[in-house]
Length: 94
Image 1 (cartoon, helix red, strand yellow):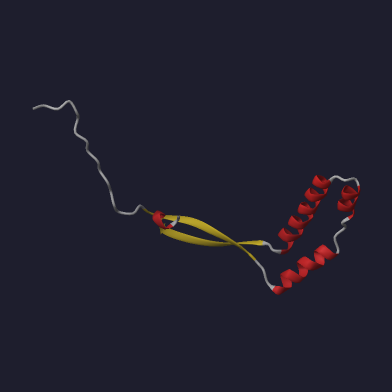
Image 2: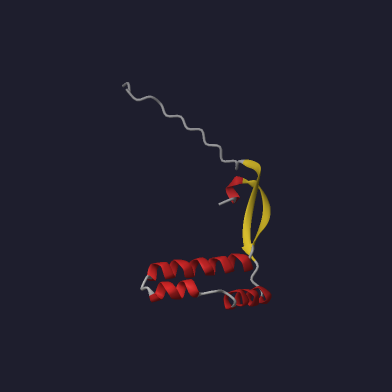
């Protein structure tokens, strides 16, 4: 009996691929001093643009301005720091 199918050959290398790949993790400083600075920045912020938008019934503009102010204060206060790590196994990067 003959078959019209070609044989299937699979090569599977089960060893992990090894390479020195730099990876980074980020963190933000969140201590009591940073919290107090964040509160101070918000307390000294000029909120007039939001009040004006609310008075004009432009809720979307008021929210966008509020979000911008909060993000700017947050990013100024809680600066991003980087931890560099090196992994020799790409399977552990996941």
